[in-house]
Image (cartoon, rainbow, N blue to C red; front, side, top):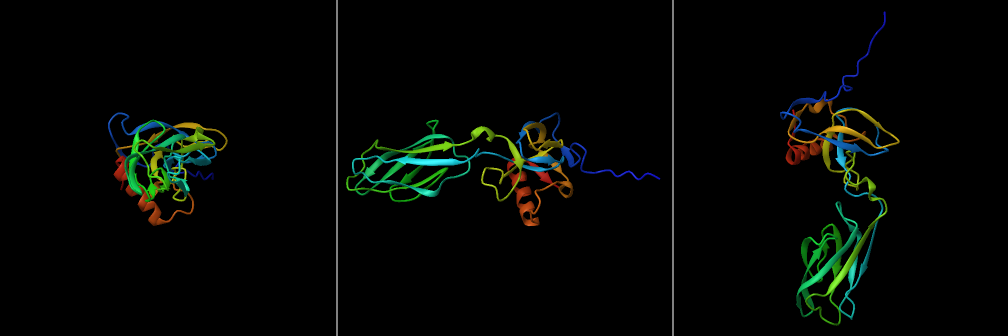
Length: 224
């Protein structure tokens, strides 16, 4: 007598309890090469930092203090390019500045002598000559391999490339061992059966619970 064994986690969308009408709950995403063989129901994170990041700085000059980079000098979501640190309210031995990203968007304001902890991280110190309005220091970010930004990998709480934040669930299985693979994902507004989801090996129950909370709050993917 032949015994047949069925993998209950092999069917596309097997984890879904309910989803929005039409295809609103789903979208197509790219699973990054090297992710391996993945089953439907695998919890994924989205890569927002594509590779080795190098950060350098250029001071205002003229004896007007120095910009000291933190270690590390960047956070998740940092863009490649030049960030401008622009003095907007100078004062004696002090001042206020704003930071523009490489697209010219203001991402925050800071105070001279106080650590700025946005996607770029530094402290701008006063010098022997006070800053003037419009003075600019530069923080330049180079990403060695930005090609993977926007792709998906298995969610890993220990990752530093963005995959530490859960972002979707793999609807269809795939083999992304040696090449990128496009697959349908559960991206939003779905009830899922938590017990049949697939996680990165070694994740604790607390880490899984935290990931499910993020999926619920940020994407409307609710575990049952």
